[in-house]
Amino acid sequence: MTEQTKAAVRREFGANAAAYVTSAPHAKGASLERLLALVNPQPDWLVLDVATGVGHTAFLFAPYVRQVWATDITPEMLEQVRRQVTLRQLDNLVIEPADAERLPYTDGAFNLVTCRIAPHHFDAPDHFVAEAMRVLVPGGVLAVVDNIVPNGVAGAYVNALEKLRDPSHVRCLSLEEWRDIFTQSGLTVEHSETLAKQIDFDSWAARHDANMQEYLLALLRKASDEAFDFLHPQLDAPPMTFQLWEGIIIGRKTMGMVGTTNVASGL
Image 1 (cartoon, rainbow, N blue to C red):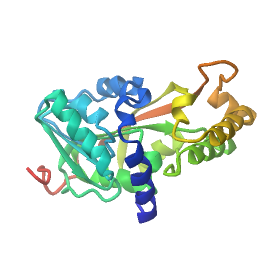
Image 2: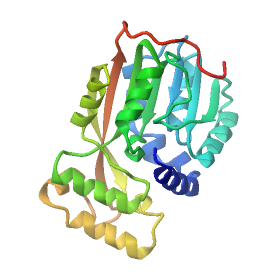
Image 3: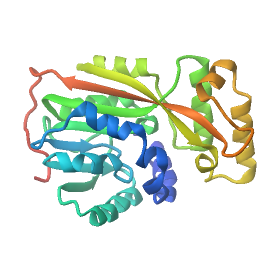
Image 4: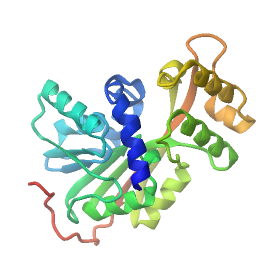
């Protein structure tokens, strides 16, 4: 990430870190359990959770694997992870800072790399995928969940809306773009799917004042046909909601691609 993007991410997520502990799309989204079922983690696995936020994905996998590294660039997020680890009485989590696009781990260190609802904050998702590929063991799995958009003008509209709501937003990709990045990085795409999620407008826009909230509402109401169909806003009576979509994509590193080591830093 560029320093400008890092600063924006730390500013936005640092100020709102505590809210993500109970945020419904992050803490209870359908993609959490779906991710676990698709990956089928094994007891001897070492897992790296990139851009962990407040740790929901790391906590999901921890009971099923040997050890999980929960990483993020925002100190306030990692502090929330530390608090939750204590409450959950987990003893197999390593919590440390790491840049998604420049991972501080040796080649072939992990059996699984996960990243959920975060890559739309990355400047270069392809760099992240390449780094994930590098730190995976041969046969290792990369599992990504992120908000996706349709191709074309409708996708640009949704990204502009998200950028207004959250200045640290960079760009959501389409599922097709994600598949292309995986393939170009040498990963074999084993599975991809989309899941709709209902967004409560008041919670989504809560960080803004009344004027900005009205502006965001107007943009939802006036979206073009394709963007309107994608967002499916229901704004005439409370609770006001709209729809976003998550893509899940699972890729595997070819067995012949050998890393330099099978030990993560810090072990």
